[in-house]
Image (tube, rainbow, N blue to C red; front, side):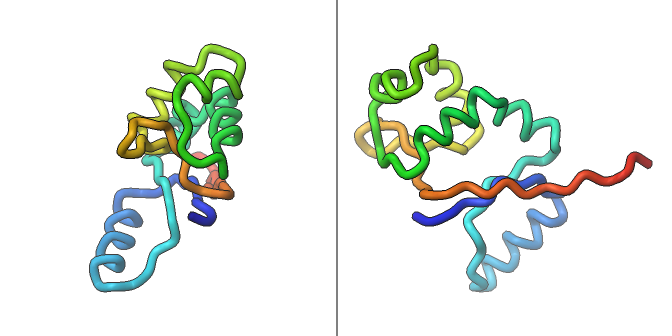
Length: 111
């Protein structure tokens, strides 16, 4: 796959994209979070390093993930799997099926 955009989206924006997709309009690959805080919780710096390690790597075993990212990765991998950022293939290998990552969000003035 190509690039994926990590974004913070409102529920209304997400619903609009789903409706457009159901109407046959092609959508960009996205992984959306409902809040800025959730994005940073899931994609903390150590997990973003893990995503960077897996970008373009193809499916690899958890043991190979740990070898490439020398710290303890088990809990980080499972957090990213649960959040839908990483996937498991049919053989149980870990995969981030994109070759590039774009992070897109806007911070607005507090009300």
